[in-house]
Length: 426
Picture 1 (cartoon, rainbow, N blue to C red):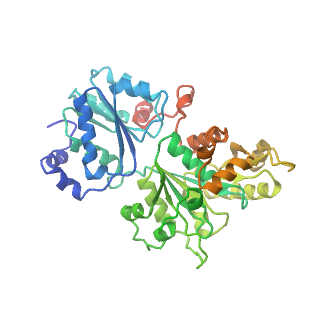
Picture 2: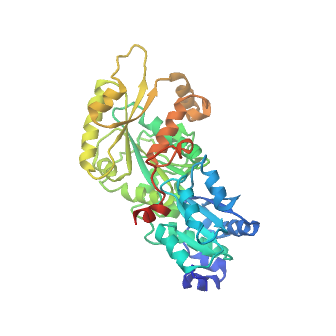
Picture 3: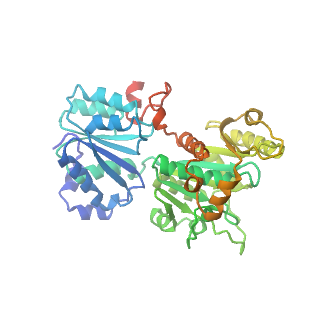
């Protein structure tokens, strides 16, 4: 028996793969990249996608093994999971993983496929934070089981990061910013994103992404606690590669009154199935909205540089800080800077007044935003060279906790990937 494969996996390996997978939980929409040294290993990893549990997973294989991964991530963002094959000796593997850690994001998880069956090496790698070490030759089902234990097992940590965008004043551009940042995350970081449009009577996610799906967020909320991953997946609409929506009905045939925790299950379920969850929060103040803001990972306040926005942003910032004293403080994006003939408060002065970090400044540029809005497109689709797209990407990189590829080796305060945190702490 392989020292790295639990006995339950060995028992499962004796059963037909289809029978084992039939009752298993589907893996969430994660991105996996495998770096293999041998073509047989690449074929083995690729065969894992035929397992029913992998139906939502985006898996790609590359050559080069551990060294290839190190070189690739010097200029590319890392996925949710990296699988690397290595033929290095027991003494060389830890040093190579140190070099991989230098070019990886903090949230990255790692499975190592090795050729050394050494219990001491296994214990050292697991102690250092490597998610799993499998000895080759192994089976595709063992690989899927290892991935499933990380992302789909009962009690597995949610993979999704929740980011709420809130306008300080109606019309300040919180929805437009949230949708364009979601687009930047999906295209630049190649992470799956789910946009939740919480403005049920007047939401614009459907319009901005040119979608008119028959179902959306209202159906999930009205499921009365019966919503599950399968139902949520059915209610989503695909806007583009790596980006899905739960749109608002945007109808006034009835009122939308909710209890404090009515949105909680949908948000938690979204966190378990999608790596990045963007919440488009309406400009309102209700019990459910207050509760939602208290529980998300990041909050971005969007404001125009005038007095009314300043007052509202200050009130929001103070309230949010009081709601979540141990969580990250809200971030500020000042939008529509430079409107002709309008007196404005300087962006940094605005940020200092509300005591929030200034995350970005969006200049007023009516023409491309107007074209994008009327066409149901994102700014990057109608004006790819517009420098505002760089701001959207920078905001996306920050709020997701990712590392910008071009700056990965330049930061002295880079967070350690999960597969080296425990090693460095010990």
